[in-house]
Amino acid sequence: MKQRIITAIIGLMALGVFFVFYNTIIADIMIAIFASIAVLELLKAMKLTKYKLFSISTLIYSYCVIFSTIYFPKNVFLIVTLIYITFCFIYMLNKLETFPIEKMFYGVVVSLFIGIIFSIFVIIKYESNAQNALFYLLIGLGSAWWSDAGAYFTGTLCGKHKLCPHVSPKKTIEGLIGGIVVAILGNLAVAYTFIALCKNFAPFSYIINNGIKVDVLRIVLLTPFLSLMGVLGDLSASIIKRQTNIKDYGNLFPGHGGVMDRFDSVLFIMPYIYVIFNMFPFIH
Image 1: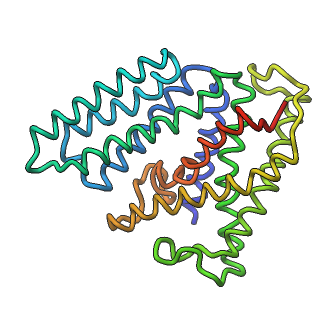
Image 2 (image 1 turned 180 degrees about the vertical axis):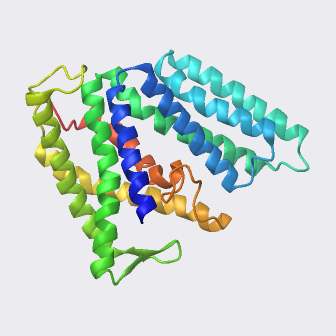
């Protein structure tokens, strides 16, 4: 427990540094590195790192996806993807006896999925501004992490009915409900705190609008859906761990696991954060 607390404190400090540099390329590089680490963890889980050339190309591609979707026209992303897939098929044909097609598709899907999802962390910044993007990022992370915390404590106190025992034996329906409630309250707290900071403190240079307004009803109505998407992401990642007989994806965060262990529930949330940003904005 002591190690988990120390790691959490260090993680929060690192997150604070990330927020300070969020409006710079430093944040984009940090996100690309985290995406590549997540891909590496998923490759290790399926024992694909022994195919060194394939693994290296997959990591490079997942890193490049971030920048090709942000800094270059869309056709660059398509060209990079085409080159990567072409290489994968050539590699598979050369290693046909030891490298089956399902492994190649797994690597391609993982690198594409992780790369695109992590790029959403900053795409909103370039389609709007860093202030709005930071708010939606906080809501995305909060929907996952508030929900996890609420589910853990509620499930520990009064959890009786198993949610998905074959995948995650500790998750309960009571925990799910508690997680949703805590996520709603947590997101509302984040929203009002963010508005107060913008209005009265403005700690970052990219806080440019101190008159933003929050749509409370939309947060209350849509946070439960985001929370459920977080649970879906968590369970999906747990399926891979169970099928590959691993406890954690990595040990980057001692006591907490790897990048995938910390961000698995966020991965299914961020695409819908992008939809909300475009169609049902939380702030104005």
